[in-house]
Image (cartoon, rainbow, N blue to C red; front, side, top):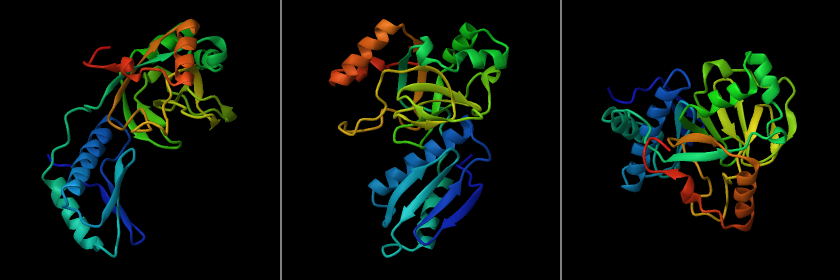
Length: 251
């Protein structure tokens, strides 16, 4: 079946949003990844004159266009024709990453609370969080911030009732059905289970954001010594990011 359109929503005179799935999840991520890839390829090939950007979200894509170069009706007709000829990918095929996370006490201030609220031991919380290979559904909220899913059903909790005003950069967190890593120090209301020493955003890199929608991530536990070693290399600008990329489906 082709990429289906749930709804078309105009955004002023310079953009429109295509809703591609009814709910956030793996199926929505596959549809969004497919549509984004097809439309970006069409832009590169000159098939969408006037289109300036295709922005992906959890279950939709927004097409931005210059109304002085191409009218909406023409752009929309071409976009729909492209998607009608395209089948969603069977699975997300982005880069597979194996990212270290340290669960030392000061890095995991919510671990005990999550264990209490889920009826699990802290080590079981860690084990269940480490087990899946997560799909990167969307990058947003902060530059490089990855929303990833789905976490084990036993770990699904609402956001904290009292958000923190300062969440340290690298904090590995969970909320609702997803997990994420804070790339910057910022306010935040997710539950913090550990910390990752790998920088998720660096404006000096050719691709500043380490992760992209469609990538997959598996966390692996490391001790404080390894964390400090990775963090020191990152601070010095000598951390080799290729060591965290995986060639196959299993790190």
